Amino acid sequence: MLFDDTYKTIAQPSESIFRDRGSKFLGYAYPVTSDNDIKAIVASLKAEHPKANHACWAIRLGIDRSVFRVNDDGEPSGTAGRPILNTLLSRNITNVLVVVVRYFGGTLLGVPGLINAYKTATEMALDAVQVIEKTVNDIYTITFEYPQMNDVMRIIKDEQLQVLEQVSELNCTIKFSVRKTQVEAVMYKLNKVSGVKVVYNYSG
View 1 (cartoon, one colour):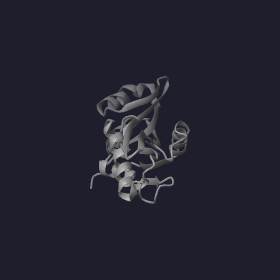
View 2: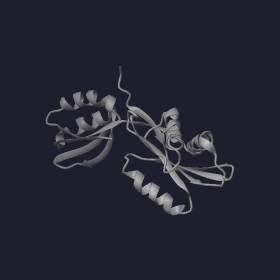
View 3: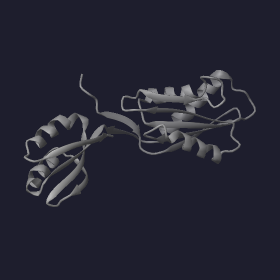
View 4: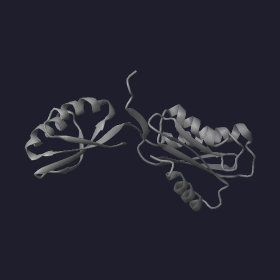
C-alpha cells in the first residue's frame, strides 16, 4: 500500500449561524495544527459571548486523521461535541477545530434537536470555507561547498523542492521542504553529489 502524503483541511477560519426555536447556534471553524490552540480559541469566544450558555467543540488532528477530542460544555453527553466531530469525519478533513456557541432561547430542543443543531451549525461553517489539499512534507538541511552549487540547484529545480532558507558562501547551506513520497528519490540524487551532508529537521 502506497503512503498517502496528502490530506484535506480548511483554508481559513469561517463562521455560521443556525437558529432553532429561539436558540441561536454560532459555528466557528478554524484551521489548527495542535490541540494547544483549543484553550485560547475557546476562551476568546467565551469572552466575546459572555451571555452564551455553552461553547461546545470538537477537534480533529493528524495527517492520519486519528487524533480527536470533543467537549459538550454542559450539554447532555453526546449531543454537541460528537455531532460536530462526526461532521468533520464525514467531510474527511483534519487539522480543524470547530466551536459552536449556543444562546439558549427558552425552549428545550431535546436530544435529537440538539444533535441536529450542532451538526447543522458545523456544516454551515464548513460550507462557508474553502477546503484545500495539503501535502505531508519533511524538512531537511544540506551543507556543501560552493563548487557543488550547480549540481545541488539542478536537483532542487528538477524535483521542484521548496527552498526555505539559503546561505550561499564558501560553505553553503540550504534548508528545503520535500514531499514524503519524494524523499527517497531526492536523497539518492543528493548522495551522489560529492561532499553534500544531509540533516533531517522535522516533518510538517
